[in-house]
Length: 179
Image (cartoon, helix red, strand yellow):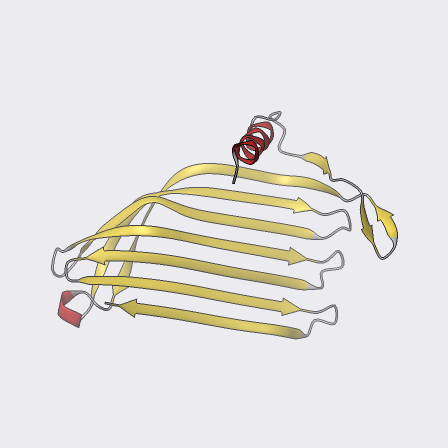
């Protein structure tokens, strides 16, 4: 990207993050052509949150402890972003992003120290104006680097229900890699 594009993105971020204190607002996007009609899309933001939050939990790392696996107590800090809004057609949208800033853990059996590298979860949900159609997708990606092993986990789910309530897309993927 060139410097002008970086500057434009920075200015847009500043404009949207330093807005008024009211979390409910109407954003108008430029007119667009849809089905030969001129449509002005509006969205009403219901809730918008961006916070750094601490988190803690326990993960089973199968490649730890010489391949026998062990529970690892994980702690860290993440940037949580949540946006809920209604679109110009009455549909409901929900977006969640959970991006780790730093995290790591200690094996409960061996005491080995694990460093988290990367790490992000994202979820999108759409509900049509009458309750259907509904679509959601969720992705997660985490990496734990420990002594003599690295654990990587990728997870993806996608579900789509049409206007008749029939499940038309159902995708689930889990990839675990120990090396």
